[in-house]
Image: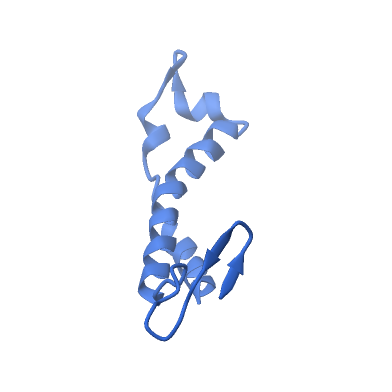
Length: 86
């Protein structure tokens, strides 16, 4: 019997641990998180930049250029994240 704080898992040769993920599931999970969070992080970084008003606003309104190239550079983030899934 395996114990986790507040949860007891019973396992034997016939049952599989409920918290075991396959390698493909781990990679898919990491890729999905990176794919969803990366553009939000990019927008946050642009808004916090000292040149935000000059580059991303026009007469007080948000310019479309704030949302261009949101996924630019995501490849290196995914390549850095996937090995940590092992």
